[in-house]
Image (tube, rainbow, N blue to C red):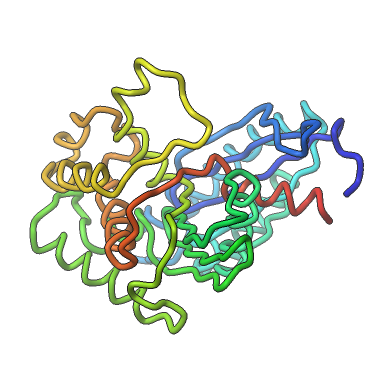
Length: 313
């Protein structure tokens, strides 16, 4: 590994639900010190209802504006930048146009990664934050467009899989007006279960010590579960929650039939209230499928995994 303590790295995650960038450098112990971050919610491929897998001209324009703002941070720190575009871009029919317009108008070269690459970068982030060296774990990352599952035994990957379902995508499919009903919830559950069990590597009931989770849905769940606790205690490095705590949250969210009802839940993020039910269902099915009792939340995910891969190149 090269001497990198004085060097800054920027990791840009062009996701389905949002664009998120972090700027970091290595600390003396080899961990990351996040010095700055930027995030903008933009749901690629959702504006034009007649063309499901098309990024609209307006979405391209908004992307350019957001990324030019992000680029100012990169310049400020003179950081080395690496980008990764995930589900929405890799599935879009006009991804070539999107990437060329971004390059022409921002100078940022977009790297479109495969689902498996995404899963492995996520694992690279998680293993550098959570000590999994003695455990058999299932890493879970639920994004806007895809869900990644990485099974590992003492840091050795057993399998890494990416599923074409995320909080934004399943909301569009099962809750297009953002309203919940028992039938819609059950249809969504059946779909999630079926998609995961189609994968030849997945064995229902396979034993894991715990889940290690990252990103939007899981972070949002932890925030809501521990909302009251965080008002009176110091935030811990690796927050966690039990399945019994999670089931109470599932009941609360799936009982809130409209966005307005969900916004009344303590700790609910305003910009997530329309899609939270889909991510919640995905995670609930994973908990049940593997009969795991605990989730440990990683501070690191795809973006941090990108930076570690940059450092180790």
